[in-house]
Image (cartoon, rainbow, N blue to C red; front, side, top):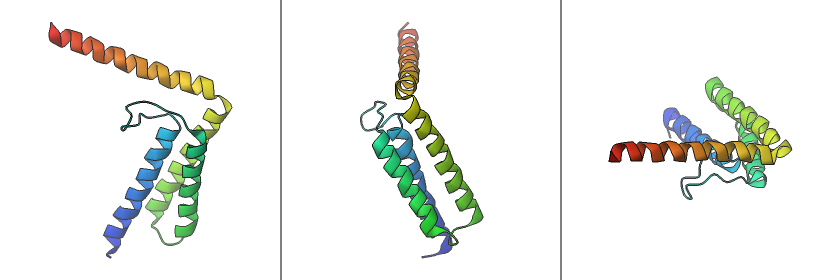
Length: 114
């Protein structure tokens, strides 16, 4: 396998895991359920998987790949800690965002109907 394709596949895997962790933290909507759900145990496991990938690939990935992976892991860990310390507050913020989006969509539909 050529180096470019290998890099694309590795970054695709990392991106997939990062997106999964954001969903598990309740920061983005799950496209399968169309809802925001929080599962901190699953998020912790996904973050651990990313950390394991970082450790196992150390010295075998480019500086850019390593930088992106480190940044993603650090952001996820900070958000995980925030959610763990204030789960109700974090969930309320996300629910408020979701309600605002639903209201905007409803207003748009009403305007289009007119």
